[in-house]
Image (tube, rainbow, N blue to C red; front, side):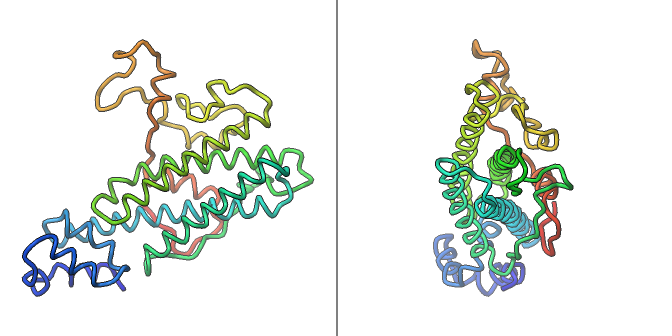
Amino acid sequence: MDIINFLNEFTSHDLIKKTSSRREMLGTFGSLGKKAALAALPFGLASTRANAATQANEAISALQLALTLEYLEADFYMKALDSGVLPSGRAEAVYMQISKHETAHVNFLKAGLGDAAFDSPDFDFTVGGAFDPFNTNNDAAYAQLLVLAQAFEDTGVRAYKGQATNLMGTPFLQPALRIHSVEARHAAEVRRLRADFLNEPLNQDLLPWITLDNRGPGMPEVTQPVYNGEENITQAGIDLTAITDFGAVSASQSYDEPISGETALQIATLFIDSCDKCPSF
């Protein structure tokens, strides 16, 4: 089903005149099939058909971005598990569980997008030779698996937050927020694995949360876009350092920052070899 065509039908006079309340309208909408669910936002919030179409497109783009990132993570964890690089024990168990989560997210987003979904891109996790994470002959392979996992999870956390407003009023806002919190737990656990591997205490650069725009020890320069903007110490126009006894370090740690769809896609594109229908912003 083409969502914009459905939107035109859904906001037509013939359909609207048969219902007298928003509750009745949503009931009528619900009977028209799950693939049309994305149109709930435009009717609820837009006053014109043009605005409705714009808001529908924003919601679709947000979900397509999420699907791109989930494809990236799902492919990465499956290849990591198949590589033989992961040490047995906790690391392997963590990657196995995260892999299941990411696959579940992919399946959910594909079902929600319906005809607007697309096949997984082809990924290149070497980034032109900067990484070789699946090679058992590479002494740095496990360290690189941890680096990439941290970068992907931190990106996912910020990207879901950045797209929340584009999902307002749709049935997908709450599931997206639920995925967002799981991605944050992934990020925290991967950071703990990195701290164990580096045999370093959980100092401010290895805590389960982000400090300023520090990417942390061992994280290469290519990952810096994941952390730019995290140094923010102002929320809703309030300088956090002016209302507490804490400095910028603790202020920045206390609030996690979103990233735009453009930034998230730029990060993902570093690892995409080819993609027929990847979203653009």
